Length: 185
Image 1 (cartoon, one colour):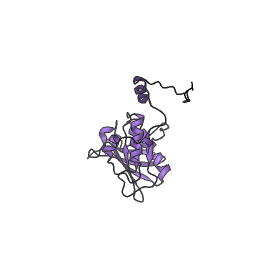
Image 2: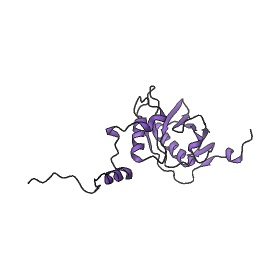
Image 3: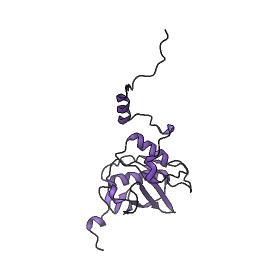
Image 4: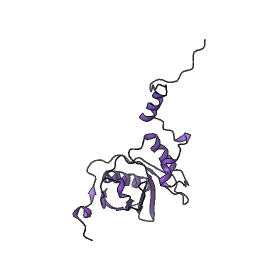
């Protein structure tokens, strides 16, 4: 098979990548299906994978060598990316679900993360990342977004969707006002 010049080149993020929106289990469990959740900000794999590799290296240490993704979920398909002076190989597998990324490296390093689509609302993404990062979770990546949010997973800051629903149901959102006790008559 003849590879094009684009296939052989190593892509490098030229700007400062955004901070990865990542939530991981504190202690990996052999019973868990996932090690956490990742919510990319875009569908640009060079920027997002550089951000992810940087965050994972800082958290877990070790050397990340390979990343496996599903091609339909991303804008382009680089085979190698440069991150912090190292080269990470990227494999594109049509049989892999778009909701999963597998990261491997030296010393038997393997990290499986649920991928939450960039266009997902804040509340849904927060709930999905919390579900994916529970120790000993048994939820499959494809089912992570269908997990109902627990009371703990409610975001501290309401997003635009929450405010819009509240406003249309008759309530009014006033972020600067603190609740007060009713006046006594």
